Amino acid sequence: MNKYMTGKKMTKISKPVLVAVILTFLYGIFFYFSTSFLWNKGWLISLKDITSQNIWIKFLSDIITNLLFVILIFALIFLKKRPLSEVGLTKNSRLISVLLLVVYLIMFLSNGDFTVKGVYLAFFYLVIVAFSEEFIFRGYLFTIIDQEYGFRIGIIVSGLLFGAMHGLLPTIIGNGSLADLFTNISSNLLGQGIVGGGLFALAYKKSGTLFVPILIHAILDYSSVLFG
Image 1 (tube, rainbow, N blue to C red):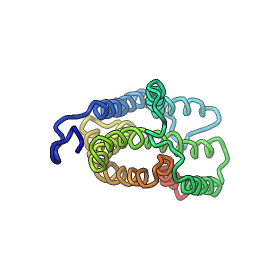
Image 2 (cartoon, rainbow, N blue to C red):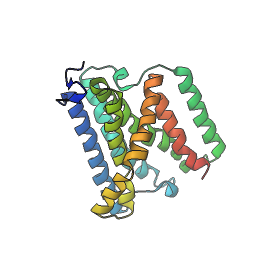
Image 3 (cartoon, rainbow, N blue to C red):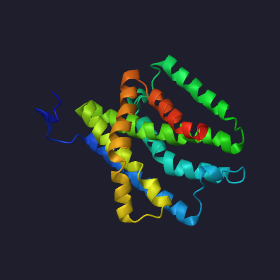
């Protein structure tokens, strides 16, 4: 039995889990305030407004708001000399991963938009959104909680934070109040958070690699471009 559990009750929060939860929570706070700053300054470029003139501003803003904490976690992993397999970056289920990647490429080709905007959209949903979210919420947070407390607790905790994250951007671009923020967060906790996040976590566990949920996530998000 896990040393942090007595019967079915957790009596102590392990340090790795506490650090992971705090770091993920800080990621959400940083995303909210950095995105709010860009929005208020008029520097938050929407996907439909991407041009060859503003593509670098869009790229840099996406790196800052979405990938900065991914880079930070990668740095911590390398400093501790830990293998990337600990965050799900493995060679498991290579055939499934390749097939999913082929599906994504077919979707991109079927869309037929090879402009700067069209190429960036494919990059955005695969790297900026799918990779960053799956890495943080499944590869990093869920993995640590799953190791310490099991699959269910991992799904619930990581799912709640994952769902809460999806309530931030609608509040920002809608110039919402604090009440709107809580409403948007709460409306995403169950469906998009625990259920959606749970399905991604299941794909991660069954395949043994983070690349499978990353690609599934990207395919689902990019389908909005392909099918309007």
